[in-house]
Length: 101
Image 1 (cartoon, one colour):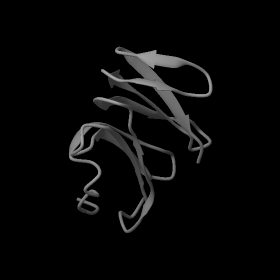
Image 2 (cartoon, helix red, strand yellow; image 1 turned 180 degrees about the vertical axis):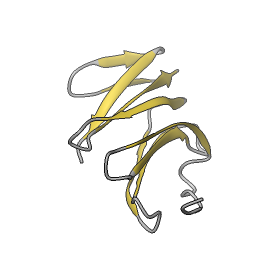
Image 3 (cartoon, one colour; image 1 turned 90 degrees about the vertical axis):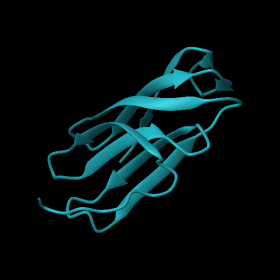
């Protein structure tokens, strides 16, 4: 084992994880409040580089995460909410978003 750590309270249930070429870990799942959470953890596990929550009007959960060569994470998931993004409206189904490194 290289390290172990606690995840922030915003990430109550983990659904998926990806690792970039530098060893940073990207984790998604569901928060305790039933919203999507996405976390970027440093390669040595010592720091959270970001911790984001996507919240709609009901429930959301991140179900998959991927990271590109530039370190941008793409998260997909499910929702029972209706919420707007810059590109699309999601209503009771699937969604996706990209976070820049």
